[in-house]
Image (cartoon, rainbow, N blue to C red; front, top):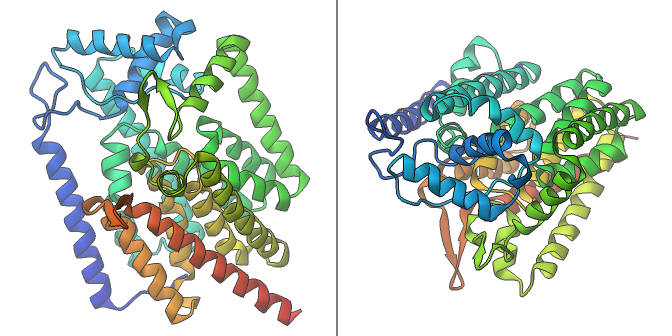
Length: 416
């Protein structure tokens, strides 16, 4: 187990995290809507993006063939809000697999506020349970660390504010990342592959991780992954048919930076929390931005594959942290709520912290603090352009982990 940090540092850390938890909770409670309305006191709809999934569940029940008609989604949303006495608000189109809509059709049976509370409770149990499992696996779940672990979850804005309080799906990503990591550590390759197949809910977020795992894991992992993927594929066809699959792919491919998903309506690049959104602003075309990310992804894959092939099961914690961070950061659809998934590599790196050289500890600590406070200063002006702080943090994070993994590979090669 990881040795406890000095008491003063622990006290400061716990105080800061507790302050964040209290602040997030008070903001949520202070803005709760009055009885009979879904509009909060700050003028925003309760649950943020949850309305998108709630209405997708209703459309799935009532008019499944129009699920990926984004114009129909907009009109359906307008009618729902008019019935609630709410004017138009910023919208998130539903561009997720039909199975996601099928799951939310269960929540759509409930009144909106009740459904939001039920979904938030589901996400809380799933994600906190998964993170505690990771903490236990890497030796962080001792009595001395338990309070810090819980506060580090609750005090992380992308999890608390952007996922739980905004009705998003990132709890699924946390559960998938945690489940794959723990099952790999325990050599349960079939289970690990099957869990990873659930990344179907948002494939671009896990593409780089998929490439790395295919290249490094035994055939049993591939059997588990393909079995899960085929099962999900058959369910998708059973629910929506080939036409549903084609319209989903068309809608999802249009929901990228620089492309119209409705006439004259695009996903703003500054909404992207990863590298791709920043690269779209920086490079002259989407193609050149994608080429840069492909090069970075190639470096990550090479470094991670070498680390996994040369290391033992326990020593691959650093490689897994690199794979998960890079896969999220390089995704073409990384939004702020997806940063919640970083809690898994944060915990993994925390278990290695005392073993790292001092300069690496300093850099990783600065990056971690940056992600925890980016809520309060998300836009950074560089050369006349505005970029998300998280995009810059991802670049530094990935570069640091690549360097650490390559140093680890060099040490192992020397020993051999």
